Amino acid sequence: RKEPDSRGLQELFRQLGGSGSSKSSTAPAFALLANVCKDHSAMRPCIRLLQNALSLEPHSASYALNLIHAHEIVGDFEAAISTLVIFCERNSTLAIRGHLQEAAILTCQDLLAAVRDQDDFVAVGEAAKVFYSFRWRDECIEVHLHRCEDPTSSTVTQLTSQPGASRTLADSELDLLALSFTAAKIFFLQGRLSRLPAIYRLLEPVRALSATPLHTTLVRNEHAYYQAIGQILAHKSATFLEALPLQSSLQPPLRDVSPSANPLYLLGDSHSLTSAWSKLPSQRLVVPKLVTGVKQWHLRADGDFYPKAHFQCTVDSIPNGSEVVVLVGEIDCREGMLLAVERDKYQSVEEAMKTTLQQFMQVLISLVKRKHFKIFVHPVPPVLRETRHLVMAYNILYEQSIKSLPKAFAENIRWLDLLPQLLMTSPLVNEVLTAPSVTLALSLGPRLGQETHLREELALDGTHLSPAYVPLLLGAYQKAAAL
Image (cartoon, rainbow, N blue to C red; front, side, top):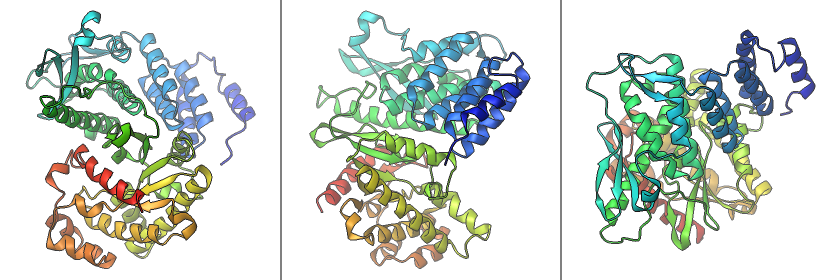
């Protein structure tokens, strides 16, 4: 879709007082128009408008957060971090204070030090003698410091809040917290894992301060990514520590990583994070290519909602001819198709599924044509009980669609036969999958979720698979690649 002419933006800036105006009353107008541009994937004007809004209101964490997310969408992580650094430098005293509004427990100056990896727990000369790990305990992500001479023992390095010491955070404080959450997300996506202990150590006491559950606030999405990444790294930490007595040469889980030669890219929604930075044979790595909140439906030919722009920018960042696992569709099953049927866009859920898949097959074909990818299609993970009947039905149609593609594309678009291995064996699972029946899966409804179970060791947070599933993913990939 063609973006607005730059002359139009110049005229807009002139009429609203210009990009250098000191009239802060125009900043909300810039921000509003930026969101309109974003909603239609016009990201360049969106970024310019948000930059102007932030220049007029340099103390607004909300404008800084929206600008950082816009940089995320176009895949410019360095610009996103630079925006955060500049904001913190200009607002070093901006703070979240304790439950009695006394001492600050998070300031922009603290966040800046964490982002710059100025570790106040380890002296420079000691840095090579220690490593960090994460532990998930009582809804908290603990940061542990280990010394290499005795790696199995550790010290918790973050402060803890006093019981009952909580209060309601203001919107501006939540925005500052969301900036911090997003920094953790970006560093994880970049493989800059050594930056994460300082950020989590800083933020965990603040999370505990909030009297309102953060998943019910306006920063729930940023918090969800922060918490999921923490739990993923806690699982990787536990796996590392369990193996440490047997193999002392293992790399600690919070060291920086970079893509090896010929990585396996995992392109998709938040489920793509679970296997991120996992090692494969021949020193290959799984490299995450996250498209936040993407649905298959967003990617249809006439769609222009911003996840489509994010998807396109992310695809452009993957080298031509790469092997790519595509993992998209869980959000369609969770909310998209049911809502479309409720609004009478389709007569049935099955019709909505088939229409969505017809559109998405064209997306996959276009990736093969344009980027020469070899695509491995990941089934939608059946984690949520409430939508398992929809996910199972969708995966049946999904696999049939992949295996019905024209021969010219079948060689480069292959299904990962992974679904049966994710669920505990039961008569009901066998009945649905042995002779795949969309009608049966849909007719069972919520009963399918109630009477079938995700394998216990694959559970992470109720939404995502645990990194323990990576060997299953590897096995399915090797099988499909050998066909």
